Image 1: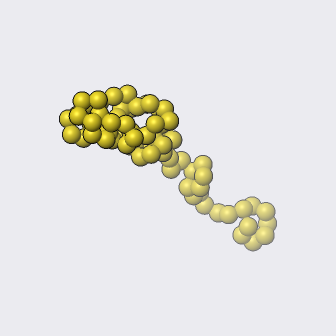
Image 2: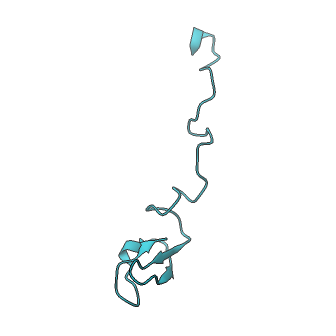
Length: 72
């Protein structure tokens, strides 16, 4: 507290609730833990399957060419 008068720190800031979030899923983008929606995509042939909750896309195999899938 500046000056010890009980007013707290000066200035705004971007702390926990400072509004610096992305607003897309839990962590945003195609990173692990990106949320329940979306698709798993085969990097070889382009086949898309819906993402299954609790199963990372890199553990899924493409139904057409058996390549490991990636998150879209």
